[in-house]
Image (cartoon, rainbow, N blue to C red; front, side, top):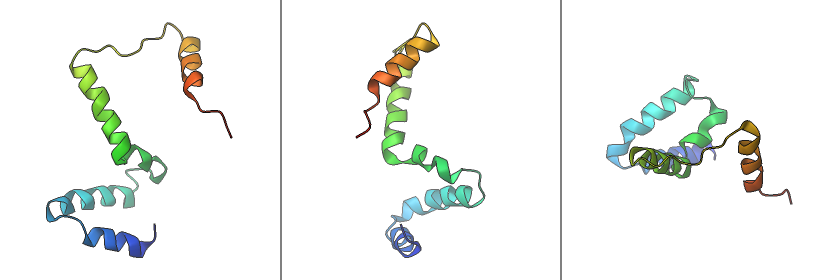
Length: 83
């Protein structure tokens, strides 16, 4: 995204979102949020975070692994092979 595109995006913000967007951008500029970690704040990732929080609140235990090796094997089975 270019600076010009960012300015256009800011211009298109609904009025009630301006303060939140400004607070977020200020955190990035002040390096309180690492730019390499911005993926965490994407709408898709935040939706997944809310899903997990809802599951925890409703008492769902999630997936429990008996060992580090079991966890890593489960994680590896979900990784897409490189093309």
